[in-house]
Image (cartoon, rainbow, N blue to C red; front, side, top):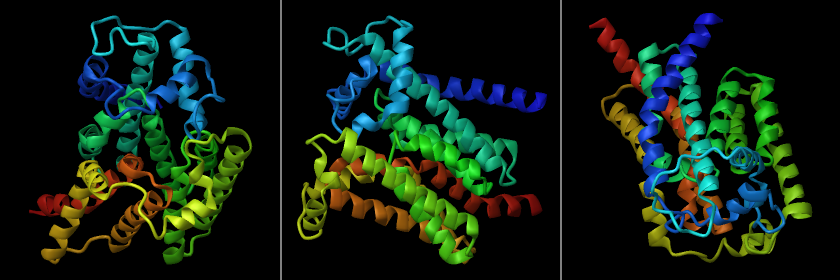
Length: 339
């Protein structure tokens, strides 16, 4: 136990050092007026947990917002000239929103380390896997920002670790996700269902059912207590059906924006393609599963008119992509060891 605590302390120290420049850059030079308009909804939660005047489903991102709310109440703050100086919102709240997400990013690196290490990889390879999360497009543009995506990625990484361990403690983060990020239920439920179709594992079926129940609870809570008019079409069956035959957003900006967020996914596809053309075996089931998850996201994007936000959603699955990249690279590590 002592060695475990020491290892995690060292890892947190180094991941913090590597991530800190991203945190400082975002705090000093970013502005929510360019691509982060959701911040102004979240700000109502950060300031006084004003659920009624925040648009749904943003008003259901309650757990991370509550942490930012509490941190802001302490007055924690680093005062330095920033791009947002003179704006109408509180700089203290803005700082704490970014700080909390920075902490989530560092912790996600740590969880990815343990995800990879538990699958038999070396400490160095596992550390590099965690570090690679900092290189993803979405980490600086979506995660270390004053919105709520970073906590969703962290929860998904924890869920993934518990899923691989076949642990029923997976219910704890899933319950939290009911009031944090509903997309994980759709992705993990689909993920578990595909695994069940191949392996017929009772656990994967149970996880699928957990996700289904949690998603239904989320929708019921949203319709009864949180729904507002701005995004009400997300739960409007008629709108969803109509979206099958008509496009609700411009396609070229959608392709460009989603494409920019996919650097880690593209690396994964490249590694698999390389192995395929070199006649090196690869995990076809995982490759199919990840691509079906991407197709699922595209279908959701068109049905709910998510538009340019779609890439942000798929980026939540980045821990899965990193784990599978490392898995596919294992054969080259073995070849090198045997040379």
